Length: 126
Image 1 (tube, rainbow, N blue to C red):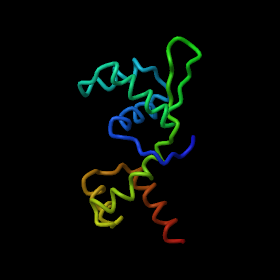
Image 2: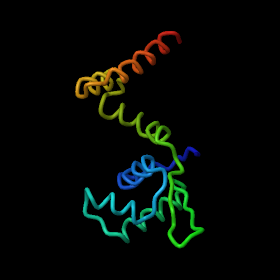
Image 3: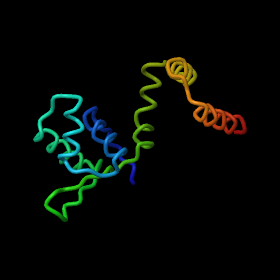
Image 4: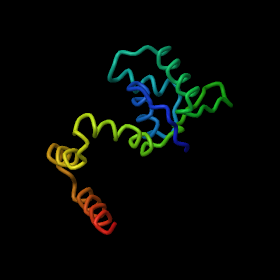
């Protein structure tokens, strides 16, 4: 997967989240998922996915009658695109405030705590 400088819109992120989870899907499958939480027409979903293809956010397999789409950007690279502005805007540039807020509002599982501890240990070594 390649990293793009084009940041996805909120609606495009909804589609990408579904494709990251599902790996690949038709427009119909994506539309069914989106319409379960918001009022969106099939043609709107189709047009949005065509735009995402033009932007390079998704790949399209059009070998069969039904086009199959998959994400062309990773979840990690997309998160990295949004994170700096998110931290600067909402947390005055403080990663500490972000982490404290996240951990204060969400009880991490023991596995997540282990992962966080590993990351902290690696950061201390640097």
